[in-house]
Length: 206
Ligand code: 5GP
Image (cartoon, rainbow, N blue to C red):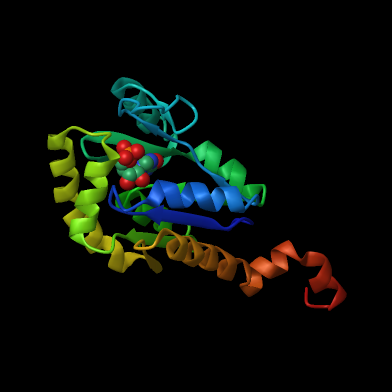
């Protein structure tokens, strides 16, 4: 599928710091927009419907699957998560760069649909640090944390299927790395041709 905007897909095991990195990236870059997923998970802490996620029940989620409303969907840690087809198609066709913060299963589905999508995997610096971060976050029950750590072993092994890998040891370094990936994508010939069409026309490059 051809599309005018860049599509960045960011995955990581929970606790790797993905959401914080993506939030910082979006604050720095007005040309990026994030897609808000649908989920059957219950809201945590300060989360609000329509801001972090569209929180829906399983019957509604299954109905959306049946209607083909999702570009991709997956079960993660026992809950269902999906990316709305309409939201993404509208955004990328309007030329905006879009960030999808989804799990590895969804990322690989997106790559099938959009071969130009840029897949970025965020790794923790070690298993110990990942466990510490999940404990410090204090948002989940101990059984949930153990389940997330066990899942992290599988998730991390999928990093090899991604285009870029960022190790989130020092936050500032990881943020710099993420900005660099986004920036390099925008410097590719096709992206420049699209976003700087007047310059390309003046140089008779079109
Ligand atoms: P959390 O419950 O911690 O917010 O998210 C759990 C996992 O589900 C994270 O890896 C998150 O990126 C992923 N996720 C969030 N939205 C989607 C989505 O729309 N599709 C898929 N496949 N995964 C998602």
